[in-house]
Structures are given as C-alpha cells and as structure tokens.
Image (cartoon, rainbow, N blue to C red; front, side):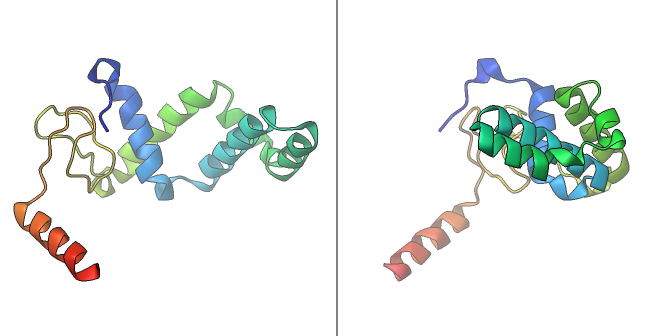
Length: 137
C-alpha cells in the first residue's frame, strides 16, 4: 500500500504520528479532552439512544478545564498537544523519517515508507522471517 505523495502535509503527519505513537505522553486533561471529542464525534453518527449514552458516559468530562482546552477546536488542540509533547518529552520521541524521501513513516520502528515505497529492512531479517514462516507451516 502506498499513500499519494501529492497529499503529504508534514505538519499534519507529525501531529497524527505523535497522537498515534506517543499517546502515553498525554496529560490527564489532554486525554479527557480527547475522549470528550471522540464521544461527541461518535454521538453525532449514532442513534439518538446511543448518542445519549455516549454523551452521558464520556461527554460528562466536559468540565471547565476540558472546555477551555478545546475552545479553539479539536485540530488546534491536537497541534498544541503535539508541541507540548515535543517540548517536554522530546528526548523520548523519535520522529522516524524515510531515508529516501524524508517523509514521516507510520511508526517509530517502521522500516518501509508508505509514501515512496522505500524499504530499509535488514536483509538478514528477511531471511529470518522467511525461516520463521517455513518453521511454522
């Protein structure tokens, strides 16, 4: 699978990468705000009954601090959190970029770029993977 290189936005990819791979670095307030946003998004595409349950269970986290954190919108909030994580935990964050095209790849351990297709797996690992496949079957 390959992503369309024309659609690459480094800023958006960095935000998504941090949120996907470093969620454990979020503060309690940031986690609560994100849960409130997700609950509202799910509620909007659910039945009335399910929306009510979602809002009661997760939307109740809309305390004044959560509302304040989200006042500029979810995307601005996500970027603010990304910047805080990079500032306060930068030593714990590895931004994995493709050695060929320099785009951000999916995970810190990824060894193949979904943007350009470049693969930098070690050849020995391929042999080991093939051997493991042979041994299992």
